[in-house]
Length: 441
Image 1: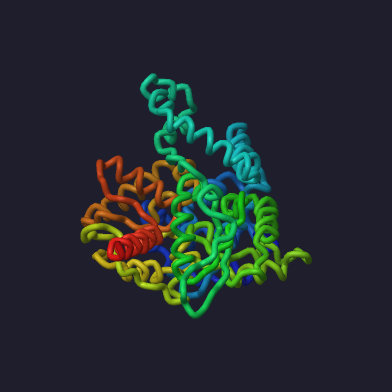
Image 2: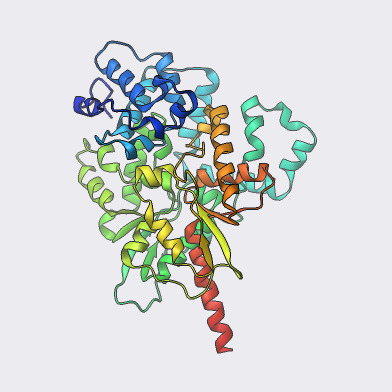
């Protein structure tokens, strides 16, 4: 990726300074300071490109304060590519070595290099956490006060650690599963299992496979898939992101599939842009362009092929469902209506629109770690809106949002269920089959 000084200058000039982005930016809304707005940040980036200022600690702190939620891109009438500017700025900051500390270098090495570059290691850590949780050792450690020995940030985050799934995606989904649907068209798709999605929400991947099978799609799920590189790209590790993009393309050659399916909003947004990441690679540039043309969000794909409405409800009685937009699904991928349309297919479901549905919940990758106060404020605002709907189920389609909102709701003592829209559809299909078996018997 080019630096801000090497970037096509027209990308930096695109901003008209109209201010349409200001009301949509959570950090500007919180502080009302120009530097905390997309317009203000772009002005700083342009000053760096013009060599008026250097990449310094103040700039690094400002870009760390930005959520990267991309709500400004949706609001912008000029079509500013803020995602490219944001990731380029963060890469510049890492190249400049700002900010640096022994602790920061260690955590970046541990996460970006040691774990998320090596799927077998990541799954091993997941298995260890699963054993700790299933034997109650985490609860016992808290009761004994042992967690006080952890660094402050880890001590704060430890109770929010996700519950690791009893089995990972490879254990739940065969590499190739064939649809038994009698529909007129058969399609072959690849299913992406993700990282956190695989460790903590593998059942959502199983639900996604079941829904695809029920809609005439043969599903290929490559075992032990690598990270897509989203985490690396958003945090300035562009070279690592390129390596992971190539690895993913080699694992799932795009020419072999009608679509490559993502069910995680944040991952899907990054997965759609491998062509810009690999545009200068003679071996992968064309493959990456084909890859981008095949990536589809699960809701977008299902509604595009004509998702079959189930004949049974997902729950025994009527339920009220509200939907929270993942920032990168709504603003990055522009997938807004398909999840709602999918939920509208479900019998026995009353939909209630969530106020500020596309306002960031404060998860934003590692934002809850780097900016805990702002993240907590955004979560408090979001949870208040959720509770105000009276919904018994909140649907959302990103693992980061899922974990953030689950922790926020549980802190309030709420029993609102968190569910992926595809999980609700899968439940409905399963209930449909159960009802059919009951009638036959």
